[in-house]
Image 1 (cartoon, rainbow, N blue to C red):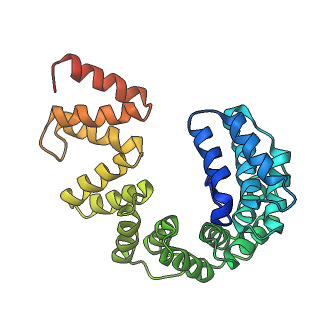
Image 2 (tube, helix red, strand yellow):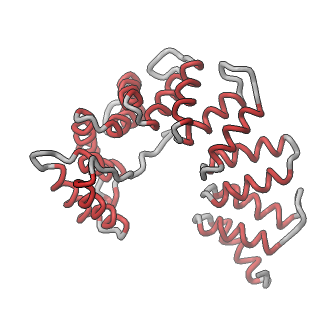
Image 3 (cartoon, rainbow, N blue to C red):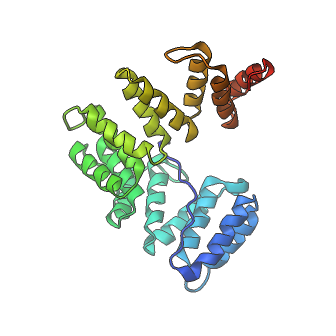
Length: 277
């Protein structure tokens, strides 16, 4: 699956925000049942709170607290999408694209992404662009993909900036332009997109830009890309392309361990027992 729907609590207006915020707080402390109860009550009101329906669907889709119910997620997203909660339309697109709880149907996925994008839900535009880029449920069209990525990137959907950088890096429908690729990767990296920081590091490696390489790897690690934490730990341990610094190596192995990587934990332990601070 190329993407994972994340739980994003939203409200239709301020008057409806409190129950949703209460449900969010319940989830944060692991009380999924309370969250479900609050969202269900809001969703089932005569004047339905469709934001609550959407978030309830996400709980069932992602299986928070083992409360997985794909059929109910599909029903709730369909209800909310029909009621003009366009984030739900994008969620339906993900389900149909990946065959989650439904038969895989790229044409249906395309239609739902288009519906959400047409109403300025920018992640829907990223997904729609991906469909155009890869000829999924539609004719392959790099120009259209680029236009949609640009639109979403300008509206601060930074995954679109990453993909736009890749368009220029890989010359998909455009002349190869590594400076443009770097520009878009940097834009996303500066806004805490780990994948984009990693992509920047590859460009800097090929350019032999050591300062840029180390900076982008450190940011990628900070934003949760465990492999880059390990790479920095190994580099500082061996002194490969950088001055050997076992204290820094320990720091990056520790970050990898915090991200639940066993190699990171083992390497941190070795350096810790050797007395490195």
